[in-house]
Length: 407
Ligand SMILES: Nc1ncnc2c1ncn2[C@@H]1O[C@H](COP(=O)(O)OP(=O)(O)OP(=O)(O)O)[C@@H](O)[C@H]1O
Ligand SMILES: [Mg+2]
Image (tube, rainbow, N blue to C red; front, side, top):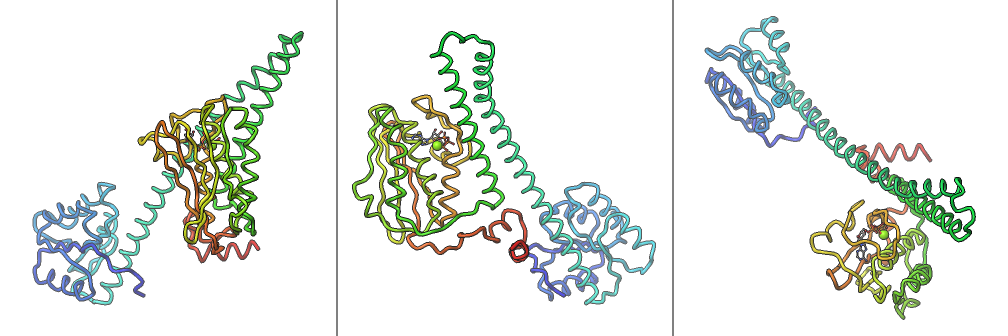
């Protein structure tokens, strides 16, 4: 069974007997492998340390001066070199030679004169082991990186929860201790602050839960036909009072009723648009203007929110769609800011096969928007096995089977 992809890297042959080396190299060459040959243990020792340059090594045990055993000892003394498969070559079919070499970390052995089919089978096995080792190392590195992202997320989440909780505790204690007993206005204020902070915590928790669902590939979308105009109007209506309160001019494009019909999860798309609108209102100053609208672009429709607010600097603009981007633009009316809205919006738009974008100029304003296909392919209408698989590193066909079992 030869299921291995041919290796791009050469095989190192360390052999002091030129004839044997030639035979070995020509067998390997005829099987499609590249080879590199050195004729002494000393050179072999230097080469074998350049482990990333080779996919495997054939190593003669009996060489004058630096022997194959010496080379093995060095190769296996450093964990960096240990992944290179080493097959020892021995002229004597002696059990103690083979045992000693295996004990010292050789992956396998071949005995001269070579039996080609056996030699190739042993090489393929060694390469297969190396592939598994490399794949495991890659997965480990990915897991480490994911664990770091999770740790970062947890510490940011814990940090951001502390402020509203401290407010709630402070004002609840004020009420408990009767410090504002005779002042109704102060009591009302304290209760309002407590309620506002509770809302903020609730909003944070919803966002954390959405992030978690997205990371696990479990955010289900409910695709149905919907009028984009209705989505625009709903989001606009819900921010009109806030905009008026801050003296910000909020405008819905005149053509909103002519916007096309789409197939999307309209509740999620309203949330996306609401985040763009909430940002515009949150980061703009009194007197600024915000416009929400749409336009058609080929097979897609673009929804945009333009504002005349503070804009974002060139240095920071590349971070806006990241989680907790910590951009220097701050809310202008004491509003809350979790730092997850745009990253969630981007993920949800992409789950609709759309694209989120930003254009902004510091001091002049910003345009945030997203495109959605007019004809959704429906590829991501349901939790799809391929995505979950990709995130979890499971083979798609196995994931598909698991999903079938769940149904
Ligand atoms: N219209 C805008 N004008 C200027 N800066 C903006 C605008 N929209 C977003 N930003 C900047 O990008 C950052 C990220 O936005 P995002 O919506 O992800 O987080 P947030 O609004 O701070 O918190 P959340 O939406 O989770 O409550 C904001 O904190 C802000 O600094
Ligand atoms: Mg936001």
